[in-house]
Length: 290
Image 1: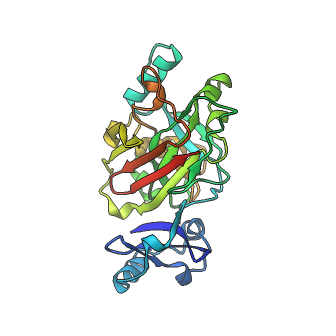
Image 2: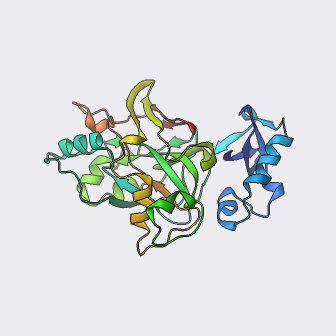
């Protein structure tokens, strides 16, 4: 099951991809929930029910007739992010800042404000009056499926609804100027999500997935989730200690090496650049910098 939010004939709705993944089957009329986020948080979700809808509907709306939107356009809380969670990226990040690298003793969490997220084929405002160092970061994002607190690591997978792609656009100069990462990662539109949420049942657990990013067709990042310093079980269990995770929460698990600041000289984004993020089993998220 791959869930998506989309616009068809000027109406926003949500559905699932057909078996051939060339069509979307609307499921909003089968549920009380008005958005995909509401479906995730409502407790209405039934895998058996949606599997039956997919099996009973061989047709749907062709993908070339819809506009794919961010699967969760308006998150209810800030994005929960992991910093420096791939060893190679942690090293390139510290080099850029002129620091010596030390392996973190605990997960490095930060928050990314995103009152509205950007979807597949959405444009990213360069904000050239504010930054000269706009960067990209491909990340596997976990979508939490049910509330939990003090979750044991061996039960973490029970709290996952699925996965999506998150491009953590970042103004590196603002990130450095303000010391804390919050401002440089929270400019409007700097969180891109999509194109779908791929249900956890589509994967073995824990998933070991290829993730890549491209700028104007040039591959920049290439890694696998097996290289996470802190894996999904650890992240969910550790963050939930004393903190209640809620259905619909988004956890960005970190990015591998190959971001713009990691090159010598750096390769930051410019107006007209096309950024594509790809994760195995999820799909491809494309955005244009304007």
